Image (cartoon, rainbow, N blue to C red; front, side, top):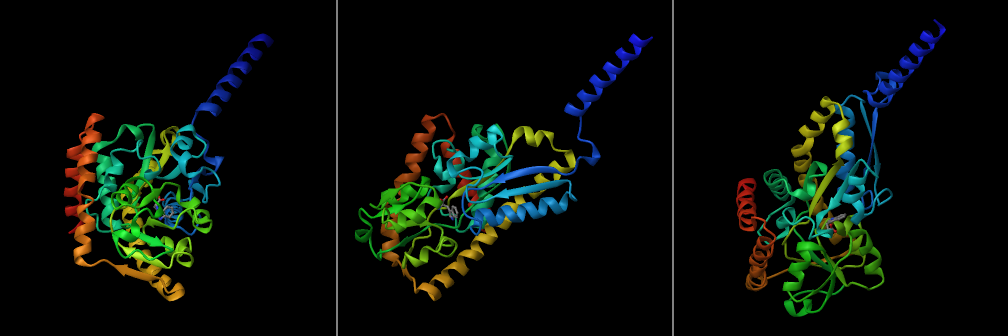
Length: 340
Ligand code: DTR
């Protein structure tokens, strides 16, 4: 009898423990906590959109989910983001795809000179492109959203009024934007955005090639008193979640997150476009930054130099077995659709 009791107790304990370890969290366990890593400082747009997403998810899940945000590379750095999320060092991470151009070949096609006019259009185009092709490099994560910057412009310590001024000039840029600078004869220097602050101070670079909101958010207007308006390519971003984390989330939480995907892309695009306007005004008023406009003839001259870039991408990417021409055609069609 005693033996039977002991045996039953052991069994009960075993099943109890198994249920505790593998079963759904009991109702009293409190909210699911997710750590969200980001690489640039808190006031910059990737972090502003992160805080907005956090607030929305926490509200819409009625307290079931708690998100801890880590701006400024405090949890994962710029280039570790994708692998860090795959490995589970953070549940969620925000990455700039330009830092690994060879890894994100399909989505980085959005930073070809195809005429994305603003961040709102860019963000919708990028997300649709991802949904259509579902590139292999995202197979091990859940995509939460994607978005882009506004088109890029030259910000520099010295005035750039012509291609001659640009010749051999060291400017920070990554990915597709770096290719543009090279085509114009400048010397693109690749580094993640947060490293640019010191590189500019130390004179390692004479300026940068990015969307203009950084003039205010990184206070680049203080060192770069000139901006040459080129409005060329965007930088694409992705927010990804660890796949096991995603699979373990309750269905209603997954739905909230999925329902936010397009909305968040659109919100971030709009935020960026408005913030660029604000940063331009701020730079003029605070540091008397001169915004240099190219003449019509110059625009034609500069754009003509970019023509081979698209064909080169198509050639190189087709060799990797990807439908490069269709990708480019799709981007053009999506721009036309969303720019209406
Ligand atoms: N320069 C690009 C994109 C970019 C534009 N604004 C910010 C702010 C914070 C980080 C990155 C960016 C880049 O380095 O990805």
